[in-house]
Image (tube, rainbow, N blue to C red; front, side):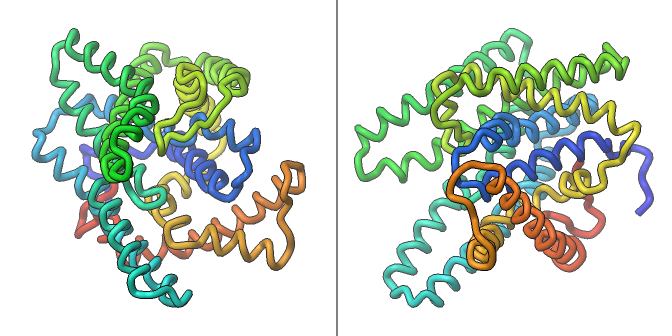
Length: 363
């Protein structure tokens, strides 16, 4: 398809950065042990997607279209994939329950849970990321229209929500009792979107700073420095770190620092390296990250491969070199499987990801 005059070429380093993000997500779902590598990549594997989105908005000159047009685009690129893949996951889970011989009541109970999880925007498996991105972009759209002082107030409120959501959830659980999960799901969806808004803003500012300092050698040195800070600081933040459940360890400030440094560091380093190498695997993963994010766990591929590897070979029960090698082998097999899925969706069922006619997916 020929490129229109208004379209800008895709940036290899951003696709490669998204590729690192989605591979890190897949690796984290394969490794169930809280190992150091997974804890490290957990500091940037999701924030990097938000930063890239903010970067692209800034590169495009900000949000200059009407809210109606903006909402239409976001519904096509995020909500349609969210609901279409949710439907596929629900059908898959019902088939699994049937083949396991589960009774009718069990199946209907789990169906009701899955439907509410979907409608509440909490999201099945990794699909929560799509609604978090949707909410983050909607918030960002409106905040960008505000006066600078009101923008600052919105950021302060978002930071407060980032810090206090886990604490408030603990109080809410004690008050609501059996109704806690019902109330928790939509609240989590909103608070994750608000946190994502902070990373979107960071990506927006990153692009502006990169334009003011255009020297890529400086970008490289700064990127390396930021990655060193990320690697040095992340072990200090002990405790559970889980963006999905709005838990950011004992020191949420350190999570935010590591997320910003790690995400920005990879973007800056890859920008320099992209002049010398095209990163074919990473860029393919990045361009198709939405499909991979939606299917690798939700449709059972990751679980089947992990169980298959355990049965056919082995899988270490402790963190060691063998464990990492085996996890990477499973990841390699998962990528091969996902290649077929991506090709099938892109060529035969593009409507699943919001592509209709000549509509193109955003960078």
